[in-house]
Length: 407
Image (cartoon, rainbow, N blue to C red; front, side, top):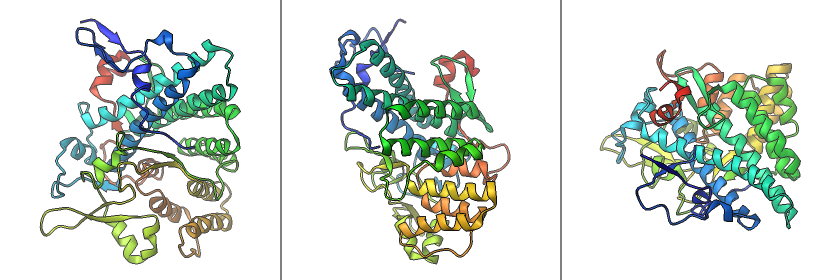
């Protein structure tokens, strides 16, 4: 059967419901084509803002779902059918470390990432074809977003997806070969470095924090510290994905008030019992469940429109604290940084810090932000039996369409 490849506008004109701060899908040719399209040749400078919105929207959906499923695969959240409306076997499989190739929840997360990848490349090519812009600031904005989100797509593939239980990675060209996580992190850094020339001062600090995180997860500690030192500062607004009632935060219907499929680990209630002030960064609430059972769900994203932090100055501080310990064994510097983060949440200061404390502080500060999976891997603290998956499996749909992935 012939296939009709939708032009890029199919993704940009349906995306106006979501904005940000701080493999394209196919259609069968013998059915009516989508009506929300503009022919590719008619896209000019005036359409660039819509393409940027489409890029942000597709990445937001892909990243949000990937981060949520990553938290489910980690020890931060779990699935239990005694929770009211928790019925998806695809979630149960992920929670058990057996994500399966035909997992449609994982497929639903990967598809918008593929679209974001396509749009980011198209945006660069389109800007170059247009050449001179009447509004030079729009050209700068387009290239900043293209390189920023292009890097974020690679980072997301590197962090969450893989071909085997311990074989993380994805791909960097449509239909191209599998690329291991370490190389994808490097490619993300290269794209973010390119974005720096189109960014303002605040955006540059955000980029450096993202670069620091990629280096940290890649085990490149010296490079991570160099970037984090130029990263986000106290007072910088978090870089977040913003959602709408049309483009919901995935947590709302995955592990929130819209529908509770995923609940949080018991230790978060224990954290609050030990120090109620931790509610400032661990907002949880009782989840509807069967009689005689008690479960808690996240309340960090209570609404469809709740934004999802991608990176914050507090995370940048915790990276600097960890790197002070790893590179210099400087516990004094690390303690100062950790206590600045705690002060921003109105928490009492700690008296000492080591890598074990950093691990716990990251657990609390980055609650349901999708970073726990990577922390468990790099701190070598996996919670499931040997042989279970530490990545979301690249699904059958991608494998069948790309012979390089092994079919």
